[in-house]
Length: 69
Image 1: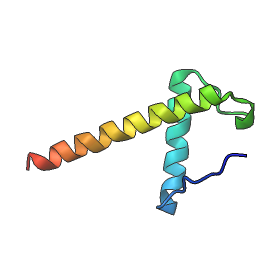
Image 2: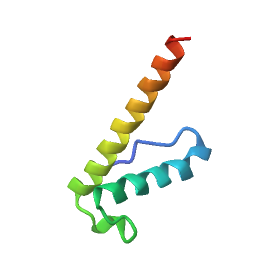
Image 3: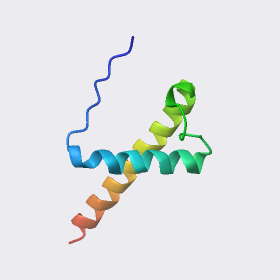
Image 4: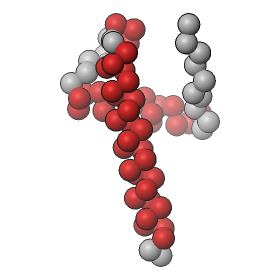
């Protein structure tokens, strides 16, 4: 059985992360409205991978913006 090691550090961010997850899934055509356990590992991993990619892009953009100041 897999262990769940990823924990949200800022509790207030949970709702924003959930909204982000549903937004990405919707853009990719993955139905996250029902039972998440019914989705394949590939589908869940794809959504999570795209989320991480976009969060890294946002952080890089933010850092680049701060360096220009």
